[in-house]
Length: 342
Image (cartoon, rainbow, N blue to C red; front, side, top):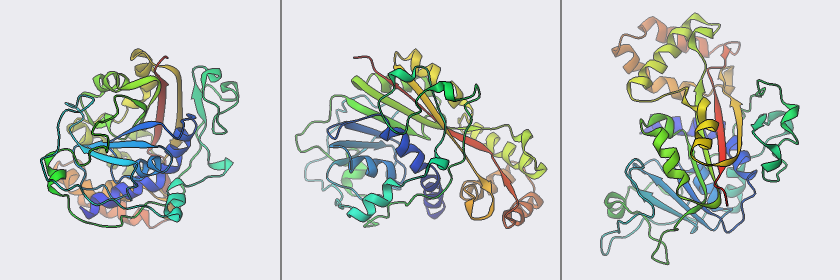
């Protein structure tokens, strides 16, 4: 569990500010109903709940959820691949939901994060005139090159710390963790956000269409997933071997680390409009800016067992990370969004 918490913390510290920038640019109102799919440690779900009136976070396993929980945030334990909306299951009688923790103003501000202009990722859009008004959006995509140049934004954003490390209650184990005070779940959502989830699920293409169907007219679907750059293009033979093994390992588990390239087209195929996309470069190495040790270290034993790397590769990897001149760009994070027509 400790390694998984470190992995999730690394993701949050390197990507939260980027995700918050994308979501802030949609122009959602305070009354927006939001669904966070696969919340992980919960930083984005918690951040949304400080800005919007009704947030639901759904995951098959909620044991890693560690963010403070304002009263606007509810958790639903369910398998996304079989979930229908609204859900029909109910908690058992007399089951006690986990205690809520109100986050302080300071932690709310830390969760939001900020970045200066040099840290903003360049964005692309099929029709900039259709994009919601926001200072985070470019005035025109004409300012971008045909390759939509990306900038690295790997500075750390603060990660919410749990007010309690209590184990899941019987309500957690039963399925529904929370039940709205009204006794009903939202019929549909103004925002559905899924980050680093769909690329791991074989049903990923069908899920886009299903999630789009859970939006209100005018609602937004935002999908964020990694795009792994070809391992053979790394300037380091060590990383060529290690990153190829990493991609092979995840492929064996059903993950597609290059699927995200087609996200805008898939959102359009699901009937969404006002399409847009943005990217953020990742950083491996470069001393304290490294975000990949927590991702690579937990899978090294499996990579060794599969014969994809050698013990010498592992030793070289750990030695190389100690050198701040050792730096590479293994992947970038791609966010794409679309809006259900009114």
